[in-house]
Length: 473
Picture (cartoon, rainbow, N blue to C red):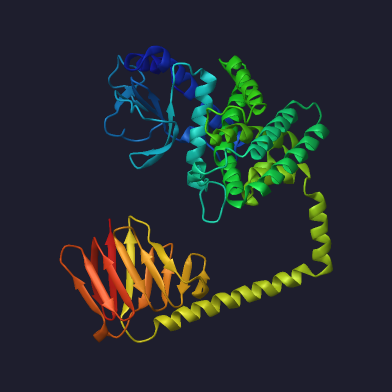
């Protein structure tokens, strides 16, 4: 914990009132992380994540750092009168980025949470925001291909989301009112009934909205909504302790969230993305009431959205599940799955053999790799594109690969694309037909009847029949 003596040190290097609030709030966020981290979210330890507190116009306080402080930070010691006092993993920087925002970031090559502290922020607010941004760091570390948790939403859809669709806006307002009523309900039966009503309203609205925007909403709720849930959860857990100094702030937080649900679509001065900061905590509260903490593990293990988790916990899809089980029993689902497993394994083997056969034909094997930029596609023939395995594609006839101004390559021959390795590989013709022209300044052109390639910032090497073009930004 940050000691009283350390608070004195902070006072000497940062504005006294702000330093005191940050010191106390960070202690509480770390304490809840150490003692009750799993009660916020399984495996989540906010006390292990460095936090950058930005005080606009004043400076930046770094707390929870291990090892040498990043460049520009002055160590804060436990006793400023004793220069030999051991460092506390806390540093002060006299600069505060005027464009700073609260978000998950990196500092000195490490993931960190950044929190902008306003003069109006009370201790409960700082505890909550610290937890929220630390949870984003946790989400980022948990990110895995094909998993929803940690993936984040396509935020660019905010630019085209149908904010002028009155029917959609009315649907949002209805969902907010239902959630507020569910939080205020007096019995479990009432909460469960309202949860089902919410899901019926939500799914009906999202069907009309369209797949892309519905997915945006669900992933934003999973991303920002869950982070905001951990904010209110951590503050509530702290407020249950007798010595928490801002119980009024904790009560105010829940009241504010419930009130915001009742006018969810009316606050038009704010980005629609901020709606998920209200629905996320509400769904989390409702799930806690219906299923305790096990919904969190179920969400991760089942690769669910928060919306899916509520459907699971409320029994919303009970009839659907019963019908599916009946059909699976009638039509021998285990046998169908066994046949599908065999078919998929055979398909993988055939596709891999097809790749090996195509790359084994005589001629120059051209391998193009990109580091520091995205190797994308500027043209494909979808009817002649096969998946070999997840992340590996076989373009059987033609493809145009590109990477901004770094690469433009058109192939009239089968090409293997490895999305993970950022490479494309093809046999591009007999040695006598392939012309490689580097200019000595990182630019290269390759021509044959089967490929036309232009690359910059490229290094060309040859090993036997394999010509490799490495592009590094």
